[in-house]
Image (tube, rainbow, N blue to C red; front, side):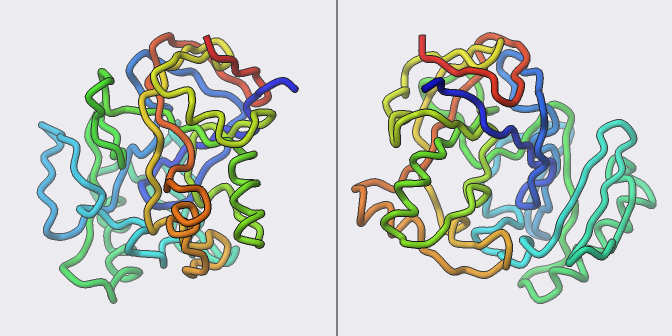
Length: 260
């Protein structure tokens, strides 16, 4: 069976909902365009947009601590900068997130109200040109922290068998979901290169899973301790791999993927 791309997703705001794509063009050393471009910083977070540096995810609102974020459905239009926020099919806000003036004030006020029960002061949206708010710090065997994350749907299928419940792949917030690959075979790609569509990726590490995967994206409730199940049943808490782009090119949904 041909191994191919089942789904392409980006997550413009760290911790918020995915946006499926039909195709994407990757550049060497870069993540998906606009992936984790924005983040909701905690009041205590020190982030300088003029000199952006990677920070641990605990500096930001994210699903590991703030499962309430899964109630929201967001859409980002990179052409005009508009962010749309909905909950239960009702539009709550539509404003230009790229506008650091009045619209950004509206967005910050929305999140301050929505997250008012969280400890600390009011949150704020942050971004910096060329920066991505990746969970993963740069690995010693890579040239960048701007990774593409890949998850094998067959590995999720094995997890479902032992958990005895359906597991939404979006829990793992991957950029590329793969089909046609035997379960767990992706973990053997670490240190190797793969071709995805017209792009070339080098797999740098497995992805260690945290409590964020316990949050059901449909209900915003913690209902499944995935890291615990992975460790108990499979002897590791990995699901998916990180890769860096070493050869730019376009990837389309259903494009083939093959190791070099």
